[in-house]
Image 1 (tube, rainbow, N blue to C red):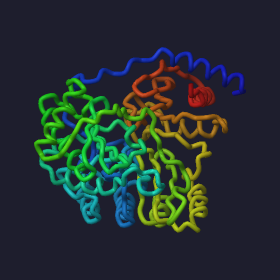
Image 2: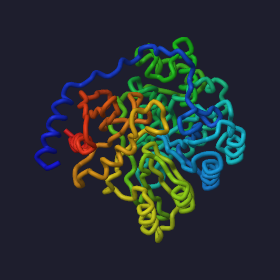
Image 3: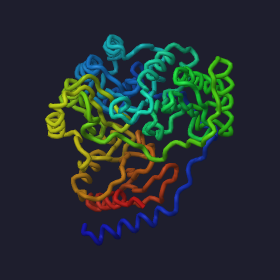
Length: 449
């Protein structure tokens, strides 16, 4: 496609996006005919490529020992690969239906299964660069350790759904943009802001009380949601201020000093994922690499795990490796780039994601990963790109937040649209050749207005 044709496609998509599809209704009671079937380490999900286990990794933080055990499980029981999720967790795919006992044995021995009752509710994302690059207002690692322990020790928290999400943001606003149900925001004065959902009031608590305040907020949600069937805060049929007010009362009753924060602190509308490459200017290096489709081969995983002190899996399907010898940083990045990972911001793979698609998922209408790879190969360098996410069906499993290009397989083709927060542009349906689809996606990604 030439430059003039590309500009025409850009104009067409821009015009179509000015007629937005309204956001879905908030606060409407969900209609469900079954319980929460979210997979976990002990509750396996049947997929077309075998059983699937989702291993919760709070904050995405893995020791070398834990990384080794996950690789052992993938090789012994599954397809040999590690699949990253949009919450910084790990999925093991291609598992046999009878592998549950051995998997639990491996994970339990590595500290990856601290509570069988709570393993599916340990959904905690945390700022992956906290303490590494000098931009943290507060180090969230102590919060992460304490909150996970509190969750696993709470009988009431076991009633949370596998979709309920906690976010621990060190003040930079990265994971705050992910729309968590309970968010802690670090502040330079040592205090923390507690946000319940995305639309309600913000409460201020001390840093020392922050993890307990987050737990109490979640436990209060369990009480309030019991009669509604809600799995997430956004599903509650309540005014946006009601749950924060109830949480504030519960905090004060538990001896936690909680005051309503006077400033309006809305969550960011755009995510701030780590840049690929070297992180921080002093001391041992931290390196961030992107993972196309979130899929790591055993060799790639082993190379990352052996390079430094720990691995931090991010909600953007990238990996931060800490404690790398600084004189080896450049060589490591070159090695990982040659191995198929995204080691710098100029890669054509930057911002490209996709669900598992065919043949792994029976609901998928297309091999969307193959489609995405073909589009990356055909794309034109040097154009400012929005993130793009390819989905095999309208469920859009694992899609990003903020502004992105939505590509969904439909019978006979694909629909391409732009999403900004809760507003989805009118989609353009593309039928025909792969080159036409590549041109439409490239045009949509290059339109930032």
